[in-house]
Image 1 (cartoon, rainbow, N blue to C red):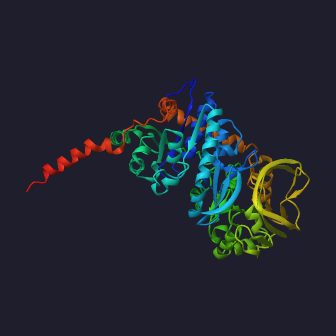
Image 2: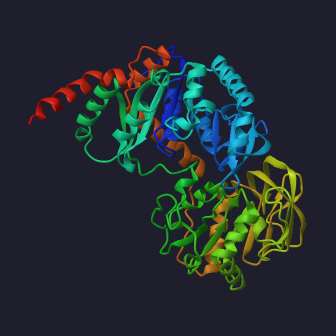
Image 3: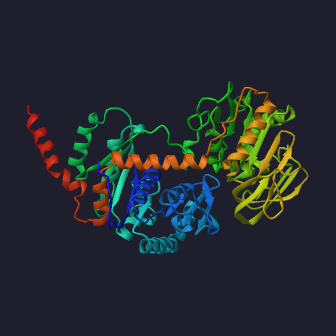
Length: 530
């Protein structure tokens, strides 16, 4: 595949997917890092995202975590410009609408449609500004463009491509099976006008001998008139900053645990809440050799683990009710009584307290928490959005906060001290909690925390690795993505697509199938004699 310089390259394209979690986010990140390594000024863009995994930007808003990772791939700080519309699901039918980084309202599927026209303007303005500032903008679609029931109001897929005249690359995940049908069908259900913008395909997560796939790709090109631009192999080492909560499955491991430095493993159970938010907080633990992290969703999985993490939630009171129904709440109470380590983060921290007074997310009013911390939380309509720093016993720390709940009273010792001198978080015996996301990405703090957990659990054979660097691991994954793009994608063809822009002369599925249909029809007639 092509490599080398990309002098003067400019333009924009959209990476769409046959399904959610098909590989759009990682392909965009890989393309961004590949171009940035070649000296191209490149930026990511996702017009509309639906995710509860978000980060706080330097400009004081929040965006989807994948766009923050893509910005990092470009050598940029995360900005609300890269993800101007974010939907954060709080229930099966409602989501918080975040525009240019700020929460605007809560919407249902139907009333969201009333916001589409002004949101279309927001998206168009931001993309135009980015295209003026950068050489290349790599856009990521949302879900799949084959959701034709939503086409009339689409902001992120073919609606964006038509409005901005973007060529489109469609990526499909062969690990799910049926990728050739997915790629063909995605194009086939589109209107002729939308089909004309599809420039090629990428197959993601391939395992085995790629030559066996070749005949199928040749037939796909004959059927659609579009080439497959590359087949990206499955890469076991890519797992940080997963955006889609569909990938957070009960009983599933987080990451790829490396063998322990010492003689014993440390075992961590992370609660897979129904409305889990910022699930990526536990990924830093899984970067550590000898630390096995699993998502769990029933109480038996908490037996014999050394640490339980209760992560954030977009619907704290509702997920607290689920903890009680599932039996996990009782298991946590028993665990705390026996001195077992528990860490609550953001919404998980609030659940561990005595009272949650919520008239914002759930409108439930005052409800009892688990009572493991002497903590009272009161929700406010305005959201805390902040990048924060501070220290813990001389260890410098940084993180970010995204939450409606405010600490009304805290009768426990603080977990850390913020830079402004205020106390943050709670410690009561073996139970800890904090509103800070990203706390465990502070390497020195994480090492000390794990050493304390191991000591309390009697895991004297567990040794904390002295050199695990989460930021370095994240950078290595971005470089791996760029390497995969360089080695397995026809980069010259992708650059040509960027330069050429949308090409309305591309054939439709109907026209490319016409002669084939006639041949099939004649063959059938000739063989159907008496």
